[in-house]
Length: 325
Image 1 (cartoon, helix red, strand yellow):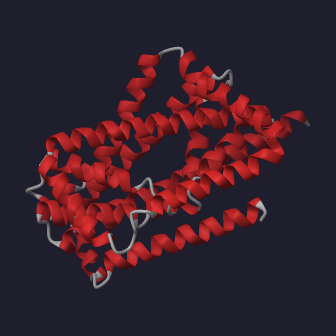
Image 2 (cartoon, helix red, strand yellow):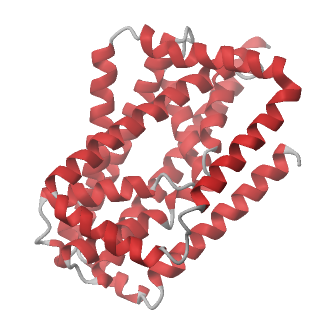
């Protein structure tokens, strides 16, 4: 099976998974009730703040990635790093995980060595984000231990009949066998790939300012949290949700985003709705509305910024061609 067919199949399956989860979460939901949300002028202020925090998070993410690229010996302008981050998230909203490869390819088109090193820095970035997620989840569990245990028990009871316990080991074992089978005939290419990949990953040890990198990571996750948290005043049913409670909700939503669906649709909504309703007794309609609006703002922002990134990137290519002429 060619890589193109694999990507198409993956896109179809992830989209079907997202649609299935969205149907499951929103079955019986009255979408007409969302109209009243947009009739309150004060909501537009909070939505604007949410969008602003989202832009800040993405810009800071581009600066952090640029630090990794410089550590790998790849020089790139701030503008280009911002454009590529915007483009990658736009691509991810259509085909999960393809955005990371896209921005690695666009760092320096036609140079496979730079592309592989850039991909290594993306791997580091994702590992750092996983570490940040572990920290956030740890804080959420410490703040709301009983709520977390109760949530896991209630959700687990509903999923036992869907996902047998042994299926995880079957999937992991099959993936390892498939990886070995593909790698053996192409060992020389694989070895060169991983050598360049390691050069990108090892950029973490060659950072000019590790403190700046850590600060950027903390700021990115803070802005991601604020992008959701500022929307709480828009929903009357959430007035009793404290900051600690919402850290719990944010952690659950972030874990849900690990599932590869277009723009995180489905897992995001499921995690938020289940956490708010099962742990904090929020009305289901309010939780559904909050999940839908917060995800809608994130998605529209990604599309808007992605289009800006595509326009800026293409404009720079056109101007470079003209200069050569």
